[in-house]
Image (cartoon, rainbow, N blue to C red; front, top):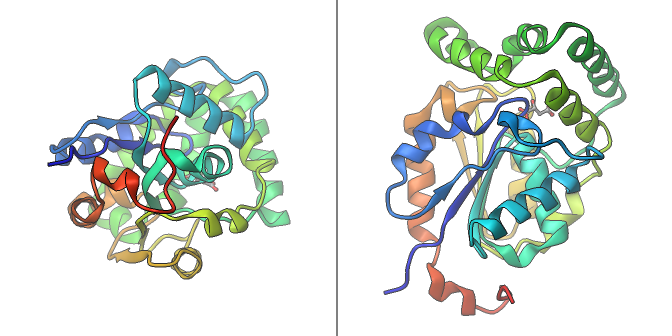
Length: 261
Ligand code: MLT
């Protein structure tokens, strides 16, 4: 019997590891890690904020934890960082879960909004960023029926520093288009998206699903961008079903997946 591979969660902007609590509780058959990105949850900031800088730092944290290959799950910013992992070290991935994310860069309007948010973060701090972001982060169903989820997300954002938030914005502003990295995906992949996500809508998820051969797409009903917190039951069911289908350590010998040296 081969052992189940570790599962690594990569958080959204501008949250921290705690956004994955319900998933960490649900996955009991393997080692689960949710490392905070550089600058978040009190971790040291990057010298130069950039998406591949976050990816490099994440890989370093996994090295320290003794993790070589793993199944990676990234939501939104977490997905952007995983595209960096695919650029830098695709051999570290044994399985991939892309939730509420997209490969494309920002539109000019979105870039302008990010620059305004940068000024807000620096001048008014995390509470003002939370106020600005909460309306779009969760879907109408959550706004109407699960106000505690929006409140929890607000607390997560307010617990971060203005510096971490500014770095995240800077890294998103300068991130490269990642459509071409999807062609490098040779591992089982699950694409998840909330049906009410307006930041990275279902059409983005469908695009990634089409680009990754053999991937599975699951649309989570009545959830917005923070689908894992808004609809943890449906999210976890899709996650656990997927994990059951990912080969364990024996899978490292399959063609197309390189060993970690
Ligand atoms: C996130 O959830 O990580 C951000 O909303 C992503 C983005 O703004 O592009």
